[in-house]
Image (cartoon, rainbow, N blue to C red; front, side, top):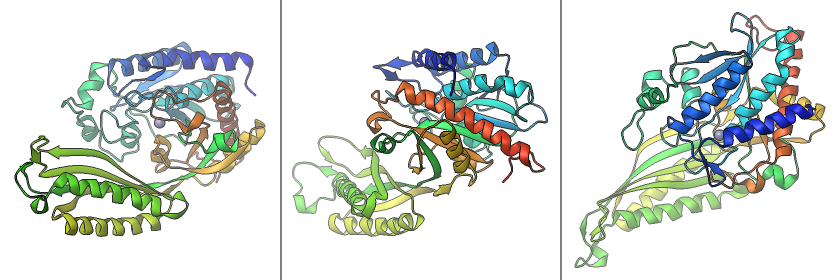
Length: 421
Ligand SMILES: [Zn+2]
């Protein structure tokens, strides 16, 4: 589908980005660090080499537009260049590098007007939520879901703010970039379904919901020696029961439709000679079915009450947030299927369990997301791997999908310049 030159160029560009923040064959490139700054610089110079208009907004989202942005509708392609600590090379970076090369392949058709829109490439700030929370922060600010000042005020574990850190790598700008007419992202699957089934392309039609709960477990601090076992109210023991109960909730749901995790513990006073008086913990429940999430939330309250009864500790949900199950732009999967078929590639529809910038963009504009196979389903570690062949397939499908969108625009764009629906 793509020429041998474009194939080689894509892989070369991918290698060049992979050297920035490289660690153990993976990447350690946290938001707002010098490595993040270097990756942004390479992307900026890649834009400038092609004569694109570069724009940076107030939260550091970095854009390159094939034509100077104006009145014409724009299709935006992109993902993120930040990584997890000791993360992989493919999460996020794949989507930015493929977007960059898709723009390059499509440039002549954009400049000649054969495709009736402008094309932009974006690197979203702080998708990973590793150093600064929450995740998908740049796209959330861009779509107006989080105020920019609140985002810039987010602090890392040492108290440095996102704003200071992005200023330190000269990533902030003042450009006001309008919403595009449509958004398209390619990402690695981060699961093993495509590889297991021998399918080339995963077409995301919706996303699992996630319920995130902060739980405070309160017991009584005492000496680890003299007090009799039966009289102790040990907050860490109560938390241990909570961890096993949460895991059992996930395992007990038929067909693997509930994923449950306890991912964080803060123990007070954390002395080997005291029973802990308090544990703060973060629990996550994920499902593709809102009914399962609602039922598991009710079950969770019962679990907390039962552990409280058995241990004497008090277990309370101190904060919670729900990311609802979502459905992508309904026209998107068909466009992506046509694109995959046009490239002689197999595809299947699926739902994403992980969050992505495309889900955030989907709340504001028609958005599409597709996946490439992850070897062994490995992700968020240095063993993350997607084969060269699949990266090239991603480029072919992205190019084809943009061309297919072009046909939709040409047939009957609506008054806002959105593709026909
Ligand atoms: Zn990602």
